[in-house]
Length: 270
Image (tube, rainbow, N blue to C red; front, side, top):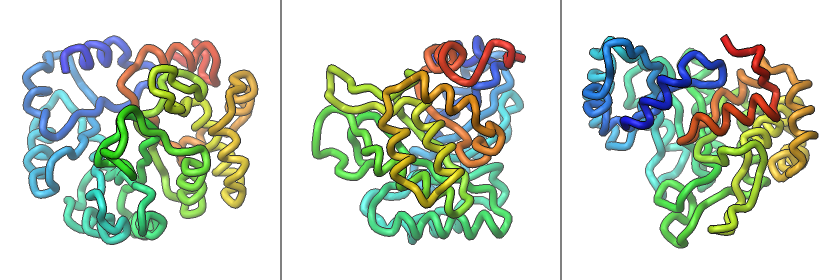
């Protein structure tokens, strides 16, 4: 927690730095380590049972040094995604600033997006989330069956993005590559999807959600110059309404590479 807070403070104010993500189970630890000058935009990650979440929400709301911006929840492993999404939306407080629901590509996942889009259409602030990498575990299909790292295929990423675009449903991506473009980790053999790949894929999904092949090609590309040029020519504000965030455990590397290789220049720094 301490090094994470230090890195976040140092990067505060940079236009590509978003919310500080904190597990609900560690909100008390976060509050102990805050300093008087802190004012964090907080994304609370529900790593406990849903019935335990209200206490963490109340603790965040009582803390004047944080501004609660979002709550992330994952759906139970093995559950029908559509039913689990409906339960999560119904059980959580209606006054959340934004509810982000992690989707697994298991039975019912497209119907889960339908449920989220319908709730959003009724006024709820909702987004979907897709995990694009990280260690195997219970929160990904096949979790626990292999050592090393998980990464969905380009086709799986494209299916998620185009499904969200078709429904006008904003999404976030989590646990991907910290570097600009997709690469294969020599230690694990897992393909890590670069954040510039995902940005260009989101551009294509927004422009034509009926063409998942073009979206998958963007996810699979290793041509950094072409990806950067395509991203720089896109309507950034429009794309950000669809692809709202990329979450990872590093700040310095993505920020430096976006400035050096991507569509973010030093002149954009506030």
